[in-house]
Length: 100
Image (cartoon, rainbow, N blue to C red; front, top):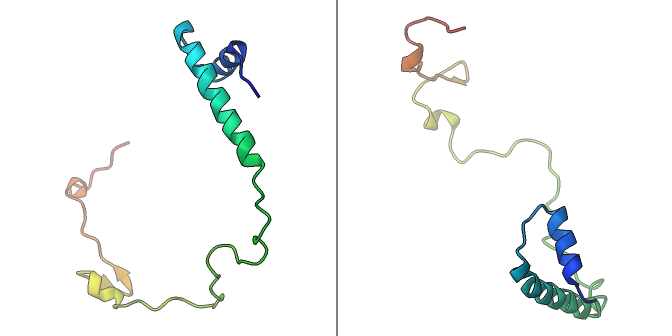
C-alpha cells in the first residue's frame, strides 16, 4: 500500500500537525516503508507452537488473608497509640487559626 502526498496532508490535518511542503516527500517515503514492512509482518505464521507453550508467568494460587510483614509496624514508627501512627503536627498548623 502506497501513501500519497494527499494522505500525508489528511493525516497531518487530523492530528493537527503542521507539515511543511518540503517535508511531504520524505514523510510519504517513510510512511510507505512502514506500511510495506507491516505487510511483510502480516504474512508471518504465528500459529505454530503458540498453543503448546503457556503464555507469560504462571499465576500464584489465591490465598485469603494478609501477607505477614518482615518486621513489626512499630519498628518503622517513632510513636504509636492504639495501633495508629502518631504524626507530628506541621509547623504551619501550630497557631490554631483556620483559613477560609
